[in-house]
Amino acid sequence: MRIIEVVDYRDEWNDLFLKEKKLLEDHLNLEGLQIHHIGSTSVRGLKAKPIIDILIEVNRVKDADAQAAVFEELGYEVKNEYGIPGRRFYMKGGDQRTHHIHLFDHTHQLDIDRHLAVRDYLRCHQEACDQYAEVKMKAAEKCHNDNDVYCDLKNDFVKELEKTALDWYQDKKLSHIFNRRSVKKYRNEPVPKEMIDKIIQAGLYAPSSMNRQSAIIVALTNKEMRDQVAQMNAAVMKAKIDPFYGAPAVLIVLADKNNPCRVNDGSLVMANMMQAAADLGLGSCWIHRAKEVFETEEGKQLLKQWGIEEEVEGIANCIIGFPDLIPYAAPRKENRVYIVE
Ligand SMILES: Cc1cc2nc3c(=O)[nH]c(=O)nc-3n(C[C@H](O)[C@H](O)[C@H](O)COP(=O)(O)O)c2cc1C
Image (cartoon, rainbow, N blue to C red):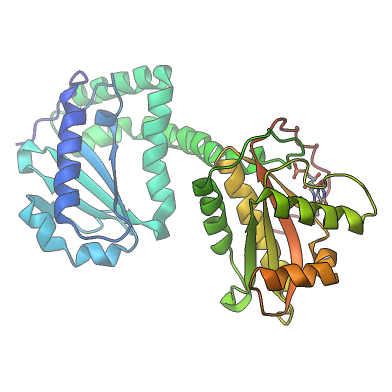
């Protein structure tokens, strides 16, 4: 018979998780494999049933089905969805249960987030941990070793906890979008090449019309060249300023002139790159007039010099650098949303 016991937190739970993670990584061959410690044993200090709960993210659940035998070899019972659509559930230890695996792919991102949210919320909120520990102790006392009764007794608390935690987690997850700003003052510091590469990759993964991927990116980090393009940009405005605000790197986005969606596609590349820069702790800003700059003879010469033979239109310049000042967001204008239900 399975004994339902809730015990004090044990340091060994973290080690047991790490050991199992290594075992799973060594034996499973699954694209996009990510293994997380979840559940109460993953929250330092929390009382828990001594079972290591593991969340596995993969690119496709079907691939995991094809490896059911591997899970079995590692001592797991394969339980398929086991009550949660889209999940694959595996358990180890029989009546002396030691491990649970909950496996999802990204078509069920909300389930992945729900688990990670509860863990992270509990890790950050001592009061919620204390309340949860008490609910669990009482449920364990009253359930007479019946796991269904144990779960029922803590169900209301867990549902509420999940709601609060998910809300907190989603706000945190989206905060990078709210925190990106157009930076117009930079420190005089070069941006490491690896960071530029990551930003460019983010740009290349933008959606594009009919998946044409026709937008191209020119990365200018050479000061002389960057200054030349800055001057050309200022000349369009007939101004004598640095329109790149001293930013050391400029990613110029251009797109195929014959693509009717060139501006849309190029703009999405820009959006991805500006967001990626913010995520990496860098500043960025959309600087306009790329179209006019590359319509000049000097602009056409530069394209040639850079090896760009196709007919392209300048979409925008994404300036990048370490921010010296991050402005506040302007208040959002009202009445811009119409909800039709
Ligand atoms: C299409 C477009 C063109 C822009 N052109 C310039 C520009 O030439 N120079 C500039 O300083 N900022 C430019 N910006 C940045 C805007 O000033 C900035 O996005 C706006 O003030 C909102 O600030 P935020 O991005 O921090 O929310 C441009 C932004 C867009 C979307």
